[in-house]
Length: 99
Image (tube, rainbow, N blue to C red; front, side, top):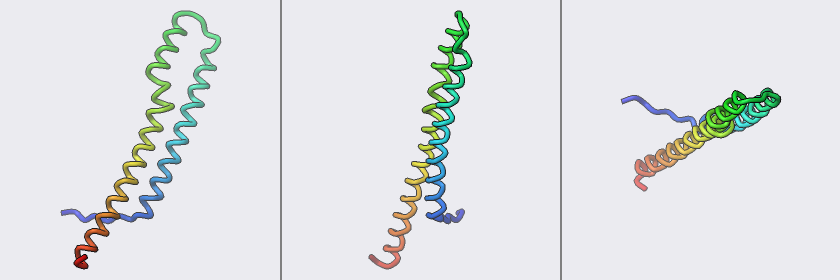
């Protein structure tokens, strides 16, 4: 069986970093949406309508919500795992001590 070594401080730092990256992805997604809308603002016709529909349906939510949410979700998962490792370590120690 493989060994398991958890460094809580490292996991905590990673959670903080991932949460920060999630915010950066959100900000970048918002800027991307603004830039795209500005780029097609003066277009006219059905192709513009189709492009806007495609962007709104398939791209905008991904870059502003889904991707940042996925990164923050990973941070939450890592944070929960770190807590579980801490709790389990404490329970094993208590068991060894006969508590």
